[in-house]
Length: 579
Image (tube, rainbow, N blue to C red; front, top):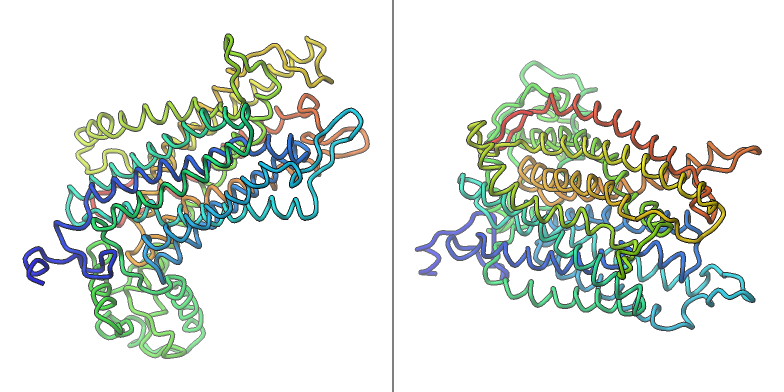
């Protein structure tokens, strides 16, 4: 108690034993460093298999190229979409500390199932031979495969929804130094994510291709297990935000109240109320009281703003129901959530482009010459190019570009979050142009070599594919780090985990959109005279270049859509400027 009185406490935060978090003892860069190390291991465990999964499904489970691609995008999409669940639970009922531990155990169980199946031939379809046609996985074997995959997806989703927020919560947002350290954390979070990816797409992929998939899954299993004690070793340094109840309850309460009050007769005296006359429910415990004292981004709203005015009706003196009575603070928080949704929507198309790195781009590389001298490079290791670029650019961006732009612009951030996201969108458009040109070149080589109908490697280096990986990887660096920090800093205090999870949900929507576009393209291009663009077993017969041009056009339209919303967005957090 004496130490607590001397050091002061962090309002709204507790330590791992549910005691008040102390200033000077809990939080800071030391606490966040454990999160960064864990992110290396977590992303290694996830990407070691995800980057090469399309080949595992086609070669060992005997799915067609399009079925394999769609299975991978559905798996990846589900994993990232479930980050919303992790974020929701972190804001509502559990701390981010607890969600990480639960999710890591779930992912571990899924990887154990996949490792056992990969090790046992009796749990996989028979191998293809000249006398035995390829048999697609089905029945109990398929059930085991997808049970393992989607347990992994559930675990990954929980981790993605909790881990970056847990790290960002270690910094004091009320000081310039704390906000700068938090920005540094997000940059290095992406750097550590890339470190795990580098090991995954080189060493682990090589082991999968040369030693067997049971080794690849086994390494991932060991890695995620190792992350748990490392994460726990930082327990005494963490400060954990107290869950404050479901943010969805507040959102739906304000929306429903505004809608119902619209149709109720109102006097001129009950249009607007202040927080003093429209209080939030009384907290039931000291922890909740401490959480209620946290001022969202340093501002208390006494009167509603003029934006999204229809929501102001939720603050009526005489609501349709007393249970639907809303404070001005609650209304303004919901307005913030609504305002960031268009930015979220505009990043889905970029992530649809990124989905191609795990599907068609890997299959393209598999048809090309993968030899570098005497070294044979697995196609799934191609992401090493953007990963190395990200690992090089992230420190340069944080220690050179940002300080320089801060001096030039005289602002705390230097480059705004929305500017950073916009750069990523432009790079994704360039990447799709390059992808289309490379596919035209690859098909030309196949035609000239009379290998259009063959599955033999083409006399063209897979390094042509590296260019689209490079630009898409760069787009990912700018966009992901920008989105994570944008959602965290702009969101209300009690909705931060859920809002930050939108960064991963955007990835999920991109993967699902990729699946939908592939299916729609095949449906629209299928007629009696022509085969669908993206159908068959031989990639040389695909019209993949047309698909990439389509993605380029859609990305261009999406960028114009983004500019419309970004130009109108007004930052509400400290130290930010407009676009």
